[in-house]
Amino acid sequence: MKVLSIGNSFSQDAQRYVHQIAFSNGDDIYCANLFIGGCSLERHYNNIQNDIADYDYQINGNDENCEKISIKSALQRENWDIITVQQVSSYSGMYETYYPYIKDVVAYAKQFCKNAKIYLHQTWSYEQGSGHGDFKNYNNDTDLMFEKIVETNKRVFENEKLDVLIPDGEIINELRKTKTFDYKNGGLSLCRDTFHMSYDFGRYALSLTWYKILTGKSVLNIDYTPPYENKDEDYFKKVDLIKNTVDNYIK
Image 1: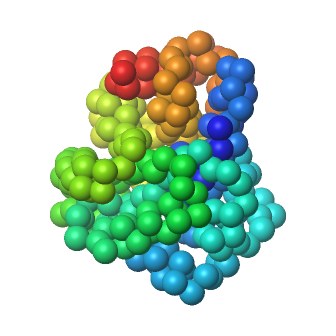
Image 2: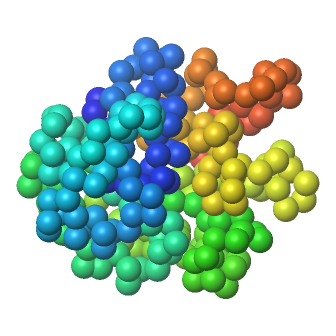
């Protein structure tokens, strides 16, 4: 299976361990991410119009020494099975920012990859107290941001008749409800900077979500676990909590 994300740092977070997870379970998923930090749908659209080779072409979670590439070149490079699109996190809960750009980005992808399915990647809300400059778009309120993201993504997904919605934002919200990851009440944060995912459990939760969405398989028996300083009993309890949350939420 070959997956291309027309994304940014949030798809970078989400894709990080997908290939490794799949490999550990006997599957071969080739993931490529088109990376420009903070890239919006409007910027993707403008890059398409001018065929700008401004993206880092990240393969299977590798973000080092990346080739610079355009969307057109990436679309032509492989016979993609799935192409994911998303809005930049700061606008992800703002319906009007998707248009008209998402229509053109999807149409362009289909022009080169007629048989590819188009998935909408739902991003997640910032942590309460985040210093992100655009958190003000949601009154600096994590719960409001989450609600707007879910509402907006569902509306866009249905309007554009896309194939699948990847519920990363919902999975992170479910984990934040648990005592273990309830950062507001002393639990472990899933973020590294209040908005990007942590390199261990945060990214792992997203990649498990992608794996289950992509394959339909349970993640309960996945052998691959994220990097961590001390893989003790408490570490594996956290890993199991994430696996169970993903497996129970996505049916």
